[in-house]
Picture (cartoon, rainbow, N blue to C red):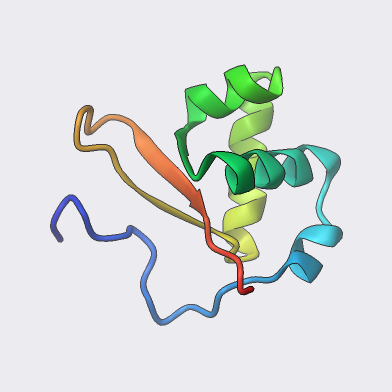
Length: 89
């Protein structure tokens, strides 16, 4: 796998805003922040939302379960992941 390939396989179906509607408020906030900011790290999301890192991590996991985000490794720092909203229009 190259560094530019998504971690999640392309065979999964993309989620919708309906999938996000039933999630906790923190996950909805993270989804909205990603909608406006395109690609962010977990730390950037925490700074933008003012949520604790643990809450952001939980929200990202919930969004990933609903297939509404895509994550990949950062080119500049392989220890970090970049998150992008991946919702059907």
